[in-house]
Length: 237
Image (cartoon, rainbow, N blue to C red; front, side, top):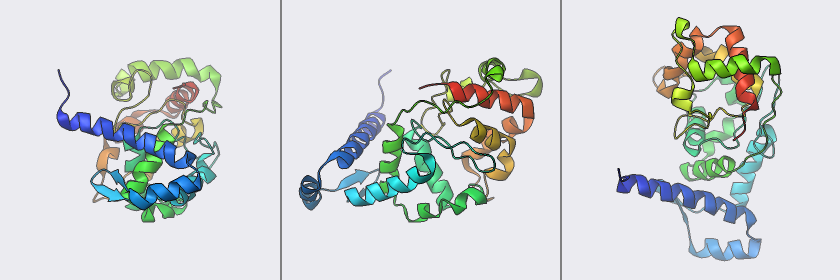
């Protein structure tokens, strides 16, 4: 079956976006001055000139918490997720969700800068971090990995929990709006699944795609969540 013209156009646009980000971050200032004097960047339906300085400033803001390679930061109360290798569409949607106060309020305190991020800048940031591929932190309990693998691949039928691989893919790479889970920070995955109802869908008027995971997270026990988080934390891209 041949892909539609619209889909082919979207794929070409995503590839061009990632190449554009690489060029922006690599170009010397003199060359950039000439480029931005005559061109602009198209992101989705928007066309907006993004300077190297602006992109670097926003990228640095993200790196301050998520790490220089977007690998994430483990922690107790507020672990920071891995965004490296994440699907561009998912990153963009989460930036928008923070701006619209649809994510948990504690995290939003550190994400207030997303309110001033334009759609074009969201696309550039998403393309940049999606292109990164550092090794996972992999700090979860290794003795739980086998159990987590079984849950991921087979689900928990007696608890009405479907196989995670059905949506996130056999290698947990995600696709489009469905996020990549491979290599995610163990403590972050555990925190999100354990407190899904409180951390997602904060705006009752805009529940969004977070609702699809609500019953899955609710039906997992704490030990099953820990095992699943450990397994995903060791997966590489």
